[in-house]
Image (cartoon, rainbow, N blue to C red; front, side, top):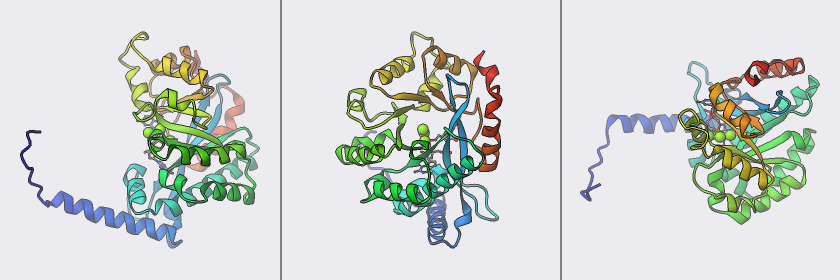
Length: 288
Ligand code: C2E
Ligand code: MG
Ligand code: MG
Ligand code: MG
């Protein structure tokens, strides 16, 4: 950048973007007002325990599907939901849907299966968040130890004390907490020491790098062993290739998630898949 003022034109693409944002805001508002709730749904991506080789949980991932429209991915509507603060009521709907999924799993006698729910910073710092989750958990009668809340690492950059207090309350009830996108830039592992969390989810960028780094070049293994020393479980996400998975196995990663195992699935498919868990052999070939 050479210091020269840059002219910014209001061009067609910006106009399209503004219109699209307005449209998304309208859709989100219609969902939280209850007029269009069916357009919000969750898909569930399996998380595999590297020791038992079984599905030990699912990550719930939000999607929008309005009639006559393509499915809208979360990277498009979550930022708008955050900007408009609609993420708070929307997030509550997401938590409720995820709890309903847990009830469905219970109905199918699937126990010991965790559902991880992505939570935005705005939700956590909203007064009464922990109490809301706890109340809903009780009223829907879901097992707290089957709930995991995923917070992105960047949340901890500010409001560190405040957020830790909320997490402490939730963990005292048995809810698990995971740091999403770990390593993507904000917190250091020394700071992690004081974090009230159970699990670190290594950012996909570290998993991607495993494709072209040798074992002694990659630091992912060091992250895993440091996390273990601090008492945290480690999940690797975004695993697409056997080579990445083999490295993670060699380096004692606890859990694995990625297209190598499965894409995010609709609730019925997810339940059908995990019901076959007992066959034990679902992902056996990947472990050889
Ligand atoms: P995330 O929480 O880090 O979720 C993982 C993302 O990686 C998901 O994208 C998932 O579909 C994708 N993924 C999983 N395995 C693979 C793989 O092997 N390869 C590749 N290329 N991608 C993989 P998705 O569903 O598009 O979600 C993107 C982000 O949107 C999430 O990242 C999360 O930050 C946010 N998000 C999704 N659902 C929610 C939600 O309910 N609430 C909030 N606040 N954020 C959400
Ligand atoms: Mg996540
Ligand atoms: Mg992530
Ligand atoms: Mg991510």
